[in-house]
Image 1 (cartoon, rainbow, N blue to C red):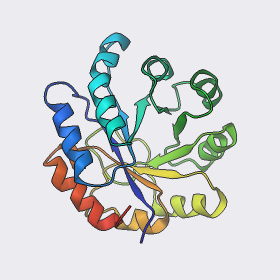
Image 2 (tube, rainbow, N blue to C red; image 1 turned 180 degrees about the vertical axis):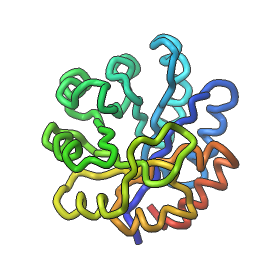
Image 3 (cartoon, rainbow, N blue to C red; image 1 turned 60 degrees about the vertical axis):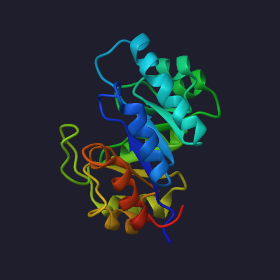
Amino acid sequence: MSNCQLYLISPLEVGGNFPDRLARALDAGAVAAFQFRVKGIDEHEAARLAEPLQAICAEREVAFIVNDSISLAKRIGADGVHLGQDDGTVEEARQRLGREAQIGVTCHNSRHLAMEAGEAGADYVAFGAFFPTTTKDVKHHATPDLLEWWQAIMEIPCVAIGGITPENCAPLVAAGADFLAVSGAVWNGDEAAAVKAFAEVLGPA
């Protein structure tokens, strides 16, 4: 049995009926965390959109992680923040969000960036993209041996991201990914069916 868990990333459109879709997805199988990822809207609007989603996650004990913005994470009392390479430092996030916050860092396919993040006190590092993805432009390609290397030397969990589906994720689980970060594979179709399909590969939580 793998200890790998699902880490859902929101689509960019989180208004309308999305809260209902999120609830369906979370009720369909075990999900460890949900990342709130919106672009090009101000913090006030982002906080308004986050509120119902945060409540849905809290009811189900799913960690609510804000993408990119330490200030939004602080404002809404999120469980943590996910930082890209240009979104501020782990030290700054820790100072502003406190010891309990989950702080993750995008490390692309770089062993150096991952080591730096680990030494700075990140709670997890994210590697990718492992597969072609339509969610964002891929500049960095990662391979499963990166996950194996990380698991051999570090205790900090690693997240695999980028074009991951129930059909292609098995090698990443085998290589030691602690979490699979998925977006399009869930939201581009029936979210409940997709979560169930991932659960069949990952096994019981």
